[in-house]
Length: 153
Image 1 (cartoon, one colour):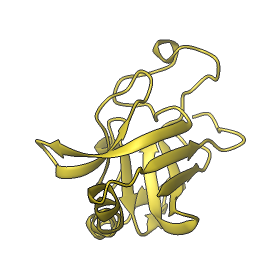
Image 2 (tube, one colour; image 1 turned 135 degrees about the vertical axis):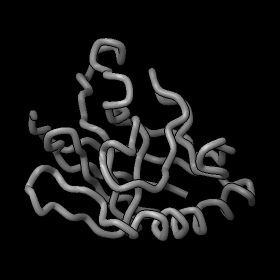
Image 3 (cartoon, helix red, strand yellow; image 1 turned 45 degrees about the vertical axis):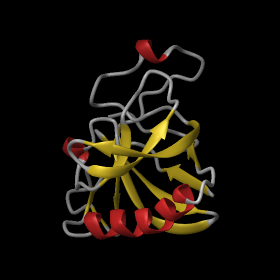
């Protein structure tokens, strides 16, 4: 199973995107700002709790989180650990993780948030598709794609 997260350019502290499973759009995403500088070590550009993970291809595993319970986690990300797909509505909820939702709101034009109430159902739907594949022993991978340009804050 292959997940693909196509990011839009960051606006202020927020990066929106679309998550697909095997080519079919599954949900919207929200992450912290992209700060990645290709070719530079993570330590030179990462701001703890305020930085989107680098682009790349990462293994998806099931993890038991004390806060979120059984959750999908990206494994093997340079300079990051415990990066989950979980519910939330804005960049204050991310701390480097990927929030999932079914609708984006941007009334202030400041980058947008996931609509309240859309995140928990989106997480449940994503897990309902991915957990059975993992439980059956399938490999699940997620490719993170940065936009061609990233707008500065």
